[in-house]
Length: 232
Image (cartoon, rainbow, N blue to C red; front, side):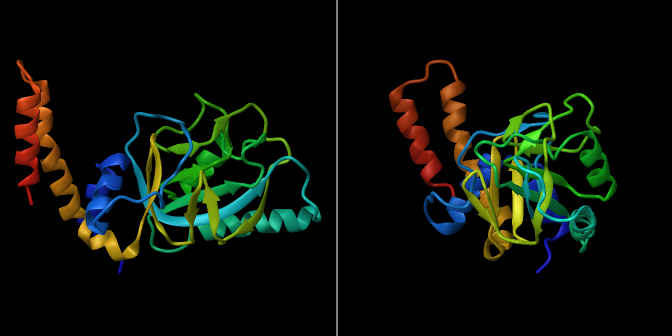
């Protein structure tokens, strides 16, 4: 079922750590799967989260493509057609197969301009980001590192399962990502997310309120925990 406009708007204004907390609430416990496990860098940490359906691809930069130039260009154009397909919103999720020793930046001024023009919602990649200060405003790239060169970077596969920062992503998975990293929201949980987000945020308030008030003590903390436990 397509995500509703209301749920999409809520996810876009909720940070990724809160989304992870809400997923734990929906699943009934904590998990060590489904989210990124390594540090990321973001093109603009002030941008809101990116949310959309995964358009996946793999790239490599450490060695030249082993195909004729015409085939390489054809695959690149097929990639653009793929990331722009569907009703969206789409998030590009690219696995750099050179990782953790990625050297060539696929993402820079040119790619950001093209993807933003194609109405892609944003990018999550374990690859290299470059051209800082020259990227079109409003387009978020969450990457693995920053570097100066594109080296031999080229697309090797599209529309395949990928792994970025230890997170497995399949084509069309719903992705939520911000400067903290990314998480996959399973389709079975999407409709339950608004209520779960509301609950986890309300449960935090008694504890935050008590901790930030003058005269905070362990006894007041214990009382705040009990108050939070009563919130359903």
